Image (cartoon, rainbow, N blue to C red; front, side):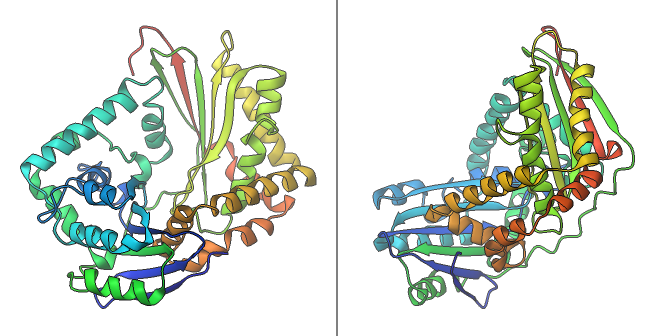
Length: 416
């Protein structure tokens, strides 16, 4: 249970306070309600670009990191399809430093030709290292547009095409900042050795005078129900053949999410899962094989991904996976299996909430998604799932016509 209190400033900034006086530390976490799904299809990668630009200094502070380091703190950020999240961890006695820095870059981020050029080069180099020069690096980039045809989840956070970042103009970048980086489109969570009164005073002082802007009211194209199986085959200079199967499933806070989550755990979480036991340990079709979910706010994907052992044909490996998928849809899961994955899930969540930063981020994410109290409902929702629910989810999600299959073929002379 994450206990919190909250208030909203006149400019629309939502603020939540989570008190934990067990250590003299504090976390200042600010989540902007903008992710890669908010980008124009011809201007992708901007949310991720801003993750870098926000550390490039402002009109008043040349270096964002230096003041944090001087007071014994740390900072970082991440971008997803749905949000962009920034956080600072520091001694609570220096809490105001974090407010000063976060408010300053919300108010007056330095976006000029020099800073843009520097961060463009950083992002382009990241793209090359992680997606072009890394074996299997473009696997996700190719899977997403196969699974999604309408929703902007069809491109990754790095962008649909790196030329969008290479050719980004100052006007486009500044417009993105003005639209999304404002109080009305942000959630601020302050956690740790703090008090609600102290946080309110600092929030009013440092954020209260910033122009509120507008919250992000989305009207995104929704992905229609998939009605036929999809398939794509590519070749690349990689050591082993790989198989990816993507199935549409409910979004993070939607009905049926935990049915699908536990289904994926039964299929492919760890060495006790069905896929591992049958196809890695026993028959050795794969040397690695797992199932996972994307946990996006809008309907996401249940992904089965594996790397084949040498000499195994992709078609045979695909059939072997399909047999296990069909079995759970037809016969369901046993009580012992369901209990095991529930215990794993509960332990993972409780362990994650040991960290103060995780509590702050989870609270900010739920609030940004629409309801801060969702942060305390996950375990209850998960515990309510029955074996019957999981079988029903398997029948709906693991339908052959709901599947997008990617064959990633090893070819020493292949091109991505």
